[in-house]
Length: 308
Image 1 (tube, one colour):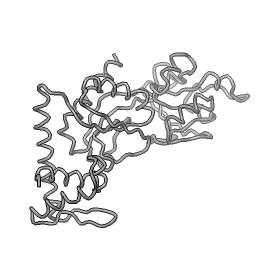
Image 2 (cartoon, rainbow, N blue to C red; image 1 turned 90 degrees about the vertical axis):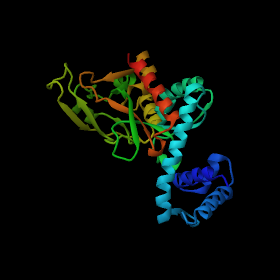
Image 3 (cartoon, rainbow, N blue to C red; image 1 turned 45 degrees about the vertical axis):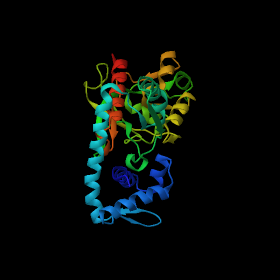
Image 4 (cartoon, rainbow, N blue to C red; image 1 turned 60 degrees about the horizontal axis):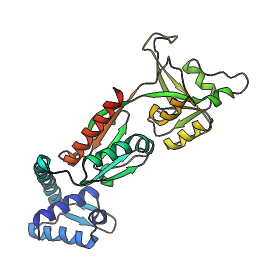
Protein backbone atom coordinates (compact mmCIF):
# COMPACT_ATOMS: atom_id res chain seq x y z
CA UNK A 1 0.00 0.00 0.00
CA UNK A 2 1.20 3.50 -0.87
CA UNK A 3 0.60 5.13 2.50
CA UNK A 4 0.75 8.71 1.22
CA UNK A 5 -1.69 7.99 -1.58
CA UNK A 6 -4.03 6.27 0.87
CA UNK A 7 -3.84 9.30 3.18
CA UNK A 8 -4.61 11.64 0.27
CA UNK A 9 -7.53 9.45 -0.76
CA UNK A 10 -8.90 9.40 2.78
CA UNK A 11 -8.70 13.21 3.03
CA UNK A 12 -10.47 13.63 -0.30
CA UNK A 13 -13.21 11.15 0.66
CA UNK A 14 -13.93 13.14 3.82
CA UNK A 15 -13.93 16.43 1.91
CA UNK A 16 -16.28 15.13 -0.79
CA UNK A 17 -18.41 13.00 1.53
CA UNK A 18 -18.45 9.83 -0.55
CA UNK A 19 -16.28 7.20 -2.20
CA UNK A 20 -18.14 7.55 -5.49
CA UNK A 21 -17.41 11.28 -5.78
CA UNK A 22 -13.66 10.65 -5.39
CA UNK A 23 -13.88 7.74 -7.79
CA UNK A 24 -15.36 10.03 -10.44
CA UNK A 25 -12.60 12.58 -9.90
CA UNK A 26 -9.86 9.98 -10.30
CA UNK A 27 -11.52 7.77 -12.92
CA UNK A 28 -11.41 4.82 -10.50
CA UNK A 29 -13.95 2.35 -9.19
CA UNK A 30 -15.62 3.21 -5.85
CA UNK A 31 -14.54 -0.19 -4.55
CA UNK A 32 -10.90 0.74 -5.25
CA UNK A 33 -11.25 3.96 -3.25
CA UNK A 34 -12.92 2.07 -0.39
CA UNK A 35 -10.12 -0.51 -0.34
CA UNK A 36 -7.47 2.21 -0.03
CA UNK A 37 -9.21 3.65 3.03
CA UNK A 38 -9.72 0.20 4.52
CA UNK A 39 -6.03 -0.61 4.04
CA UNK A 40 -5.09 2.65 5.77
CA UNK A 41 -7.36 1.77 8.70
CA UNK A 42 -5.70 -1.63 8.96
CA UNK A 43 -2.20 -0.13 9.01
CA UNK A 44 -3.23 2.44 11.62
CA UNK A 45 -5.12 -0.10 13.67
CA UNK A 46 -8.07 2.27 14.00
CA UNK A 47 -11.47 2.69 12.38
CA UNK A 48 -11.58 6.10 10.66
CA UNK A 49 -15.02 6.09 9.04
CA UNK A 50 -18.45 4.77 9.90
CA UNK A 51 -20.07 3.68 6.63
CA UNK A 52 -23.68 3.07 5.67
CA UNK A 53 -25.53 2.96 2.38
CA UNK A 54 -26.26 6.69 2.39
CA UNK A 55 -23.46 8.53 4.14
CA UNK A 56 -20.04 8.51 5.75
CA UNK A 57 -19.16 9.83 9.18
CA UNK A 58 -15.81 10.26 10.88
CA UNK A 59 -15.21 8.28 14.03
CA UNK A 60 -13.57 10.00 16.99
CA UNK A 61 -10.20 8.58 15.91
CA UNK A 62 -10.98 9.59 12.33
CA UNK A 63 -11.60 13.20 13.32
CA UNK A 64 -8.23 13.43 15.02
CA UNK A 65 -6.44 11.74 12.14
CA UNK A 66 -8.23 13.80 9.48
CA UNK A 67 -7.16 17.13 11.02
CA UNK A 68 -3.50 16.10 10.88
CA UNK A 69 -3.72 14.30 7.54
CA UNK A 70 -5.41 17.25 5.84
CA UNK A 71 -2.62 19.57 6.99
CA UNK A 72 0.10 17.17 5.85
CA UNK A 73 -1.51 16.61 2.44
CA UNK A 74 -1.79 20.39 1.93
CA UNK A 75 1.83 20.94 2.94
CA UNK A 76 3.04 18.23 0.56
CA UNK A 77 1.01 19.73 -2.27
CA UNK A 78 2.44 23.16 -1.56
CA UNK A 79 6.00 21.80 -1.41
CA UNK A 80 5.54 20.16 -4.80
CA UNK A 81 3.94 23.30 -6.22
CA UNK A 82 6.81 25.45 -4.92
CA UNK A 83 9.31 23.31 -6.81
CA UNK A 84 7.21 23.43 -9.95
CA UNK A 85 6.78 27.20 -9.85
CA UNK A 86 10.50 27.66 -10.41
CA UNK A 87 10.79 26.28 -13.92
CA UNK A 88 7.85 24.01 -14.58
CA UNK A 89 4.31 24.91 -15.52
CA UNK A 90 1.28 24.37 -13.33
CA UNK A 91 -0.66 21.25 -14.22
CA UNK A 92 -3.81 19.31 -13.46
CA UNK A 93 -7.48 20.15 -13.02
CA UNK A 94 -8.72 23.44 -11.56
CA UNK A 95 -12.42 23.41 -10.71
CA UNK A 96 -13.90 26.92 -10.95
CA UNK A 97 -17.47 27.99 -10.14
CA UNK A 98 -19.35 31.18 -11.01
CA UNK A 99 -22.81 32.49 -11.83
CA UNK A 100 -24.08 31.82 -15.34
CA UNK A 101 -24.02 35.41 -16.62
CA UNK A 102 -20.66 36.29 -15.11
CA UNK A 103 -19.16 33.03 -16.30
CA UNK A 104 -20.33 33.49 -19.86
CA UNK A 105 -19.63 37.19 -20.30
CA UNK A 106 -16.71 37.96 -18.01
CA UNK A 107 -15.00 34.85 -16.69
CA UNK A 108 -14.72 32.73 -19.84
CA UNK A 109 -12.26 35.11 -21.59
CA UNK A 110 -10.14 35.13 -18.40
CA UNK A 111 -10.21 31.32 -18.26
CA UNK A 112 -9.17 31.15 -21.90
CA UNK A 113 -6.19 33.47 -21.38
CA UNK A 114 -5.26 31.59 -18.18
CA UNK A 115 -5.23 28.31 -20.10
CA UNK A 116 -3.08 29.88 -22.80
CA UNK A 117 -0.59 31.02 -20.14
CA UNK A 118 -0.60 27.63 -18.39
CA UNK A 119 -0.95 24.86 -21.01
CA UNK A 120 -0.60 22.14 -18.39
CA UNK A 121 -3.75 23.24 -16.53
CA UNK A 122 -7.25 21.98 -17.31
CA UNK A 123 -10.27 23.96 -16.10
CA UNK A 124 -13.63 22.49 -15.11
CA UNK A 125 -15.91 25.55 -15.24
CA UNK A 126 -19.17 25.10 -13.30
CA UNK A 127 -21.84 27.77 -13.90
CA UNK A 128 -24.84 28.02 -11.60
CA UNK A 129 -26.82 30.99 -10.31
CA UNK A 130 -27.80 29.11 -7.15
CA UNK A 131 -25.80 28.32 -4.03
CA UNK A 132 -22.96 25.84 -4.45
CA UNK A 133 -21.34 24.03 -1.55
CA UNK A 134 -17.70 24.23 -2.60
CA UNK A 135 -16.55 21.33 -0.45
CA UNK A 136 -19.45 19.09 -1.44
CA UNK A 137 -18.96 19.83 -5.15
CA UNK A 138 -15.16 19.61 -5.03
CA UNK A 139 -14.71 23.21 -6.21
CA UNK A 140 -11.22 24.70 -5.88
CA UNK A 141 -12.22 28.34 -6.31
CA UNK A 142 -15.45 30.27 -6.95
CA UNK A 143 -16.23 33.81 -8.05
CA UNK A 144 -18.82 35.46 -5.82
CA UNK A 145 -20.27 38.91 -6.39
CA UNK A 146 -21.60 40.94 -3.48
CA UNK A 147 -20.93 41.02 0.23
CA UNK A 148 -19.91 37.68 1.64
CA UNK A 149 -21.66 35.96 4.49
CA UNK A 150 -19.47 34.77 7.34
CA UNK A 151 -18.11 31.33 6.57
CA UNK A 152 -15.09 29.10 6.84
CA UNK A 153 -14.15 29.89 3.24
CA UNK A 154 -10.98 31.76 2.35
CA UNK A 155 -11.81 34.98 0.48
CA UNK A 156 -9.75 37.30 -1.70
CA UNK A 157 -11.18 40.47 -3.18
CA UNK A 158 -10.20 40.79 -6.83
CA UNK A 159 -12.40 43.56 -8.19
CA UNK A 160 -15.59 45.60 -8.12
CA UNK A 161 -18.76 45.39 -10.17
CA UNK A 162 -20.78 48.47 -11.10
CA UNK A 163 -24.56 48.17 -11.00
CA UNK A 164 -27.19 50.28 -12.74
CA UNK A 165 -30.90 50.59 -13.34
CA UNK A 166 -31.57 49.72 -16.99
CA UNK A 167 -34.41 49.57 -19.50
CA UNK A 168 -34.72 49.44 -23.27
CA UNK A 169 -35.71 52.56 -25.16
CA UNK A 170 -38.69 50.62 -26.51
CA UNK A 171 -39.96 49.96 -22.97
CA UNK A 172 -39.67 53.65 -22.13
CA UNK A 173 -41.39 54.74 -25.37
CA UNK A 174 -44.35 52.44 -24.87
CA UNK A 175 -45.28 53.11 -21.26
CA UNK A 176 -48.99 53.06 -20.36
CA UNK A 177 -50.76 56.38 -20.62
CA UNK A 178 -49.95 58.59 -17.66
CA UNK A 179 -46.83 56.65 -16.62
CA UNK A 180 -43.52 58.45 -17.14
CA UNK A 181 -39.90 57.23 -17.00
CA UNK A 182 -38.64 57.24 -13.40
CA UNK A 183 -36.90 60.40 -12.19
CA UNK A 184 -36.62 59.43 -8.52
CA UNK A 185 -36.16 56.00 -6.93
CA UNK A 186 -39.71 56.07 -5.53
CA UNK A 187 -41.08 56.31 -9.09
CA UNK A 188 -40.05 52.69 -9.60
CA UNK A 189 -43.01 51.57 -7.49
CA UNK A 190 -45.27 52.29 -10.47
CA UNK A 191 -43.14 50.39 -13.00
CA UNK A 192 -42.84 46.75 -13.96
CA UNK A 193 -39.50 45.65 -12.49
CA UNK A 194 -37.77 42.37 -13.36
CA UNK A 195 -36.47 40.89 -10.10
CA UNK A 196 -33.39 38.68 -9.85
CA UNK A 197 -34.08 36.52 -6.83
CA UNK A 198 -30.48 35.42 -6.17
CA UNK A 199 -29.70 38.92 -4.87
CA UNK A 200 -29.73 38.98 -1.07
CA UNK A 201 -32.05 42.01 -1.16
CA UNK A 202 -34.25 40.53 -3.95
CA UNK A 203 -36.82 43.29 -4.69
CA UNK A 204 -35.46 45.87 -2.22
CA UNK A 205 -33.37 48.05 -4.54
CA UNK A 206 -30.88 50.52 -3.01
CA UNK A 207 -29.68 53.85 -4.37
CA UNK A 208 -27.35 56.62 -3.18
CA UNK A 209 -27.85 60.27 -4.07
CA UNK A 210 -25.26 61.71 -6.44
CA UNK A 211 -24.39 65.37 -7.19
CA UNK A 212 -27.49 65.90 -9.36
CA UNK A 213 -29.99 64.25 -7.04
CA UNK A 214 -32.78 66.04 -5.19
CA UNK A 215 -31.45 64.75 -1.85
CA UNK A 216 -28.10 65.46 -0.12
CA UNK A 217 -25.18 63.65 -1.73
CA UNK A 218 -24.64 60.26 -0.16
CA UNK A 219 -28.12 59.90 1.27
CA UNK A 220 -29.68 56.57 0.47
CA UNK A 221 -33.07 55.27 -0.54
CA UNK A 222 -34.35 51.70 -0.63
CA UNK A 223 -37.37 51.03 -2.84
CA UNK A 224 -39.38 47.83 -2.69
CA UNK A 225 -40.26 47.17 -6.32
CA UNK A 226 -42.67 44.73 -7.90
CA UNK A 227 -43.33 43.24 -11.31
CA UNK A 228 -44.87 40.35 -13.19
CA UNK A 229 -41.67 38.31 -13.57
CA UNK A 230 -38.88 37.22 -11.27
CA UNK A 231 -36.20 34.57 -11.72
CA UNK A 232 -33.16 33.04 -10.09
CA UNK A 233 -31.41 33.17 -13.47
CA UNK A 234 -29.46 36.25 -14.54
CA UNK A 235 -29.88 35.09 -18.14
CA UNK A 236 -33.67 35.13 -17.80
CA UNK A 237 -33.54 38.57 -16.22
CA UNK A 238 -31.31 39.82 -19.05
CA UNK A 239 -33.53 38.34 -21.76
CA UNK A 240 -36.66 39.80 -20.14
CA UNK A 241 -35.22 43.31 -19.99
CA UNK A 242 -34.11 43.07 -23.62
CA UNK A 243 -37.61 41.86 -24.55
CA UNK A 244 -38.90 45.25 -23.24
CA UNK A 245 -40.84 43.64 -20.37
CA UNK A 246 -39.61 45.99 -17.69
CA UNK A 247 -36.75 47.58 -15.75
CA UNK A 248 -33.74 45.66 -14.49
CA UNK A 249 -31.33 46.30 -11.60
CA UNK A 250 -28.15 44.70 -12.77
CA UNK A 251 -24.37 44.64 -13.06
CA UNK A 252 -23.55 46.70 -16.14
CA UNK A 253 -21.36 43.92 -17.59
CA UNK A 254 -24.51 41.89 -18.19
CA UNK A 255 -25.54 44.50 -20.80
CA UNK A 256 -22.22 45.91 -22.05
CA UNK A 257 -23.04 45.49 -25.76
CA UNK A 258 -26.58 46.87 -25.49
CA UNK A 259 -25.45 49.88 -23.44
CA UNK A 260 -22.71 50.62 -25.97
CA UNK A 261 -25.15 50.40 -28.89
CA UNK A 262 -27.73 52.61 -27.20
CA UNK A 263 -30.39 49.89 -27.25
CA UNK A 264 -30.41 50.00 -23.47
CA UNK A 265 -30.53 53.12 -21.32
CA UNK A 266 -29.25 53.70 -17.79
CA UNK A 267 -32.00 55.21 -15.65
CA UNK A 268 -31.61 57.48 -12.61
CA UNK A 269 -27.95 58.37 -13.32
CA UNK A 270 -28.08 60.82 -10.39
CA UNK A 271 -29.07 57.92 -8.11
CA UNK A 272 -26.44 55.24 -8.74
CA UNK A 273 -26.78 51.79 -7.24
CA UNK A 274 -23.99 50.78 -4.86
CA UNK A 275 -21.10 48.87 -6.38
CA UNK A 276 -20.57 45.23 -5.43
CA UNK A 277 -17.25 43.58 -4.55
CA UNK A 278 -15.98 40.61 -6.53
CA UNK A 279 -14.34 37.90 -4.43
CA UNK A 280 -12.61 34.63 -5.09
CA UNK A 281 -13.46 32.12 -2.39
CA UNK A 282 -11.91 28.74 -1.71
CA UNK A 283 -12.29 25.98 0.86
CA UNK A 284 -9.75 26.23 3.67
CA UNK A 285 -7.96 23.10 2.46
CA UNK A 286 -7.11 24.87 -0.82
CA UNK A 287 -5.13 27.63 0.90
CA UNK A 288 -1.85 26.17 -0.36
CA UNK A 289 -2.96 25.52 -3.93
CA UNK A 290 -0.56 27.05 -6.44
CA UNK A 291 -3.19 26.82 -9.18
CA UNK A 292 -5.76 28.73 -7.10
CA UNK A 293 -3.24 31.49 -6.35
CA UNK A 294 -2.16 31.74 -9.98
CA UNK A 295 -5.77 31.91 -11.15
CA UNK A 296 -6.56 34.59 -8.58
CA UNK A 297 -3.59 36.66 -9.70
CA UNK A 298 -4.64 36.28 -13.32
CA UNK A 299 -8.27 37.30 -12.70
CA UNK A 300 -7.29 40.23 -10.49
CA UNK A 301 -4.92 41.56 -13.16
CA UNK A 302 -7.59 41.18 -15.84
CA UNK A 303 -10.20 43.06 -13.79
CA UNK A 304 -7.75 45.82 -12.89
CA UNK A 305 -6.81 46.34 -16.54
CA UNK A 306 -10.51 46.77 -17.41
CA UNK A 307 -10.98 49.49 -14.79
CA UNK A 308 -7.97 51.57 -15.88
